Length: 146
Image (tube, rainbow, N blue to C red; front, top):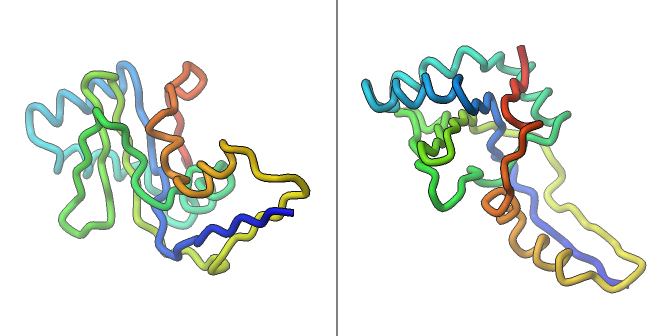
């Protein structure tokens, strides 16, 4: 039996809002025109505090590190609380918020069989999934909380 142990940090990033298509185009134009600061402020309207945190936890939009691909641009607000990731090339914007979560210090996964290469890679590099993830139509726009 193989046991994989992965550290789960207390500070995580949660998704506040992800926009794609025409909605993202408007924010991308705002970034080009006025810079990322106003875009971060605009996207904060989708952050409903604890409600957003709970919805992100429930829907799996919680990350150890800011999920960003190699073509993404990432900007933090002055407080370091929010991160804006965007890609003019792929036409999307995402606002994330740093969040202190009360989680167990480790997550142990026991397997009754030897771990596959994919399972070992995921345990060693848990954040690599997003950068390799292809955006699909069913994820075109999601609002974590309204």
